Length: 239
Image (cartoon, rainbow, N blue to C red; front, side, top):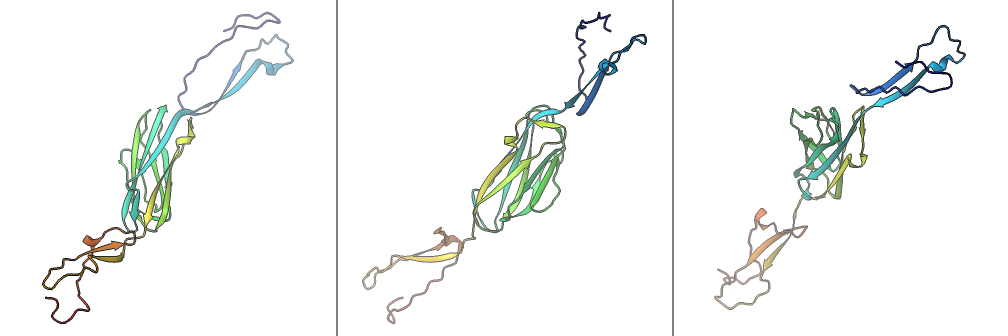
């Protein structure tokens, strides 16, 4: 209670300390009782109202890594997402999403059931982290895909959204992009036989080696079957 205040003076401030128990917009009105005998033309001056938004402060961050840097079409690979709460407050019901590029095809995803759920939805990937993440706690999500179309550099961006009632103090780390070079599947481009054009004498033994190369000039000899044949030689010249 405030003791009597003389006309023209100001009472000492009355401080009330509270502790928030839930997020939301809080409207608080303070009022002073009026002496019935008082004649006051400014009845509105006997109360004051303030509104305070109660939020959770946290810094949600996401990072992403791909299991390969370069891959051929029709081959599988994965992207690993790590979502971390850098604090200071705990956060739950965290949405994570990733619109996968057209150059890949979604296969499956993995997350610890205790951490959240990732319902299958094709290339429009989404998850909800249901477990409450304390400060510096994190969750890992793996997205398994197949390279479907070639592209010189195929970027993929994953996002972590801010749940309602949470004030993210740093939105710059709420996305993460990684790129994978997707190439056409290798095919036989040339066969090189060596030595070529060598001159040998009668009864000499000639040893030849053949190597197969794909369109990227990679040696794929161990992946193909080579059949030998000899053309344009006199009858009885080779045994």
